[in-house]
Length: 398
Image (cartoon, rainbow, N blue to C red; front, side, top):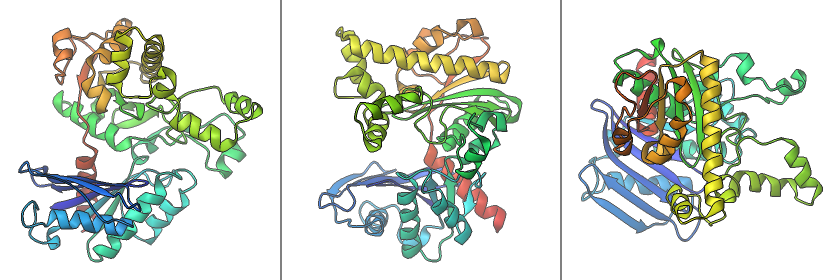
């Protein structure tokens, strides 16, 4: 089945065409600066051909139309006709507590996405616009919404409940939802397969370290706890997000003159590694270079980053009452050996070990032979997971 995967952001659309029978990536692309005169598209296919050009994209529908033209182009395209696209899978960030699995899009599912606008104001609205654009362009093609929050909805109440008055929390949907669920699910399944075990027989701690960062405790296929909360702001130190802080910091900032919008922007876009290091970048390569050159703020940023990860892994080891594997993924988790070694070096009391040569080579298993827990590096593939779930939903409903 040829499935088009759409990830519509605030001013961009990522698109991927996957043939699910062999899990083959046929093409992928990114359209940026939608609704501006400077819209651009980058496109590549499985034959190694690449395109980068300026385009006209004054709406999500126009942007996805441009993606379709690229996919069916006579020179660089990978399909002869758009009729070859058999289904479309949409990444949707927030499905609240209602959406516990990927679902075929219909009026009621779309209403849930609308109802969650207040919970994910930066993400759900463009996700929804991407869905409506595809419905206009592909009126007869079945579509599935795959929710970032769905994998985490097996959490027990003790994990997702905040200790505020319960009636207030329930009235306003205030609880932990968790994010990056598609990634955590994918790498947990991949790790289990690599270990020749079923995910239902394993206790896993999955560590997603990218610009956004989160950790999840997976107890025999069910999420026991996860670090992101009601929003993606809670938890680990991230590229520009602060992660866990004392809530009273917000009141202090208000008293010294910051508006709520100022605080929102600060904690989400100017904090984390960017705010701590003060070098104008949150790119891990730049931070490591600055630290190696003796920049004390860069060193502090990385120390805080690593310590937060260690604290969460230690906590989740307790929550799970032991674990079988520690799984690193996403940009930093997959590609920065020194971060993995620093984290694991502080977890030796849990039996965590790292083989230096394997770690440096980014091998899938980087722990020493016979070690328990196993330490792994598993590249994430959210687009493939969305395609898998899209196909599964449609085949079950056929």
